[in-house]
Length: 69
Image (cartoon, rainbow, N blue to C red; front, top):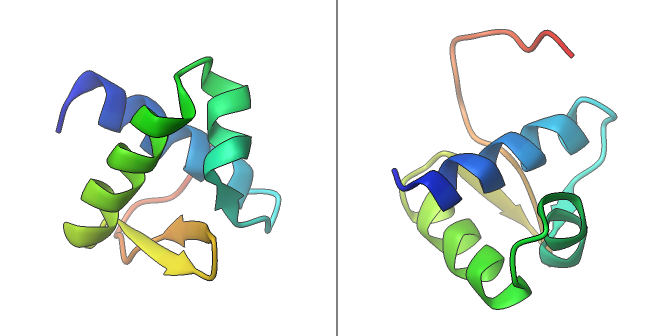
């Protein structure tokens, strides 16, 4: 995973703790990354099974760890 992938993944995780799927615009606003880069990362993370697409948003994929936010 690239540094940008990690940043995007962490932003999605933070939004998901609020029971909220994350859109590319949400993640871009949260991270300051360009939306095109965020979309590329979201696609890559979804293809790797780390994220699950939900319409135009994303939630965390299957994982075996807890979040402490």
